[in-house]
Image (cartoon, rainbow, N blue to C red; front, top):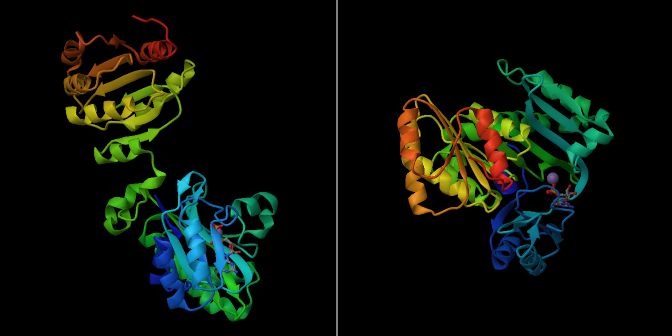
Length: 381
Ligand code: GDP
Ligand code: MN
């Protein structure tokens, strides 16, 4: 889950990281009031969950509160990379002398978190990594030992940070690390961390990604989720506790178990098809969950066939079959459904579906071939 800049910076502030004074506004007049309160030049920043807002015109400097109101009005009508701007952050403008990059993420290959810093901040770090990788300084953190003070100094030295800033930089590095750990983040990034004309360090931009699988530990953070960035189907799926990811193909997949779901998608592709989604209905799925899953799949107009692949272990095949019938009595569809049921109560399941006009398959290969064929408009029995 991605956090907005203003949300990330609020978290940063709790960990002692210096951020500019500012507040979020949902209307231009609110932006004016905030700018008046700040009583200085301000920067109006669109709060959308995409990068490169600056280039897209979503970040503008205003000299006074009436200019702030005008610019906020403009920005609040914008769409940036397909996302509507619903809020702007009105921050006291910084007088920037120098832009630094500082971020923490997981290095999967090293199996450790890694801190990255660069004196070439402000621009996208991926660009720096591609064009001038030597300008990025990296330090791995041992998850058991945690961050050591010498590592903080190594980073400061590694980016040639002037000595006078080392103390504050230490606070920022330790603060970001603690925020990263406490929030179960997968990324915490300050880009740019600026040195101002009056020689202060300031986190001007902030970005955090949180581990979805740890969100249940953080109800306060879960509440920050912005539903704009997610497909409606994914929101609906979460409500029913289904793991669902929308994809671009035309074969809807309903599978129990993440591994089997991945396998099913692979085999569909092996036979020349494209899955329309990843969907794990989970172990022991009840019939109403199955019905919800079928509704979600059928809501996608690209879906030309559905492949139902259930291995009944804890999940009972007859429950799944009943769920499908429930859903089909509610939504009339012409989309052909290929069913492969194996395991617990498979016979009962097949019996329940016997009169439902579905294409049955015994093996997964058979099921995938049939699904690809019907998705292509071929007749199959
Ligand atoms: P991003 O484009 O989405 O990464 O948004 P940022 O918050 O990083 O802003 C992009 C760029 O705008 C920064 O790298 C700065 O160069 C500039 N910028 C942002 N805030 C200020 C500010 O308060 N004052 C000045 N002068 N420039 C700013
Ligand atoms: Mn930035």
